[in-house]
Image (cartoon, helix red, strand yellow):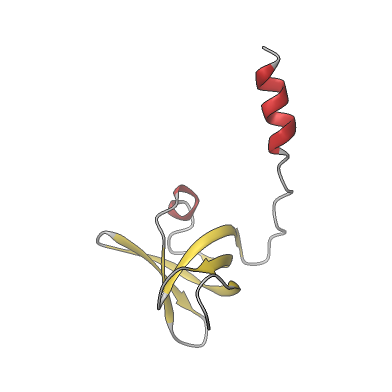
Length: 86
């Protein structure tokens, strides 16, 4: 698997000293890049879409709890235009 590839992985987020780990269902683990969205999913079963940034490192693109729907895409252009008009 080359670096920069997109992966969809299911597992449980674990917090270890100074890092977050995704324990994959069926075995194996990914070390997650620090992200504020990961913190609220500790000890939960999740689905993560992420980009491979190292041997076993994954940068989270989006995350959801298992069984939930993906959150709707945000339009940053609309947000920026509202902010700019103030």
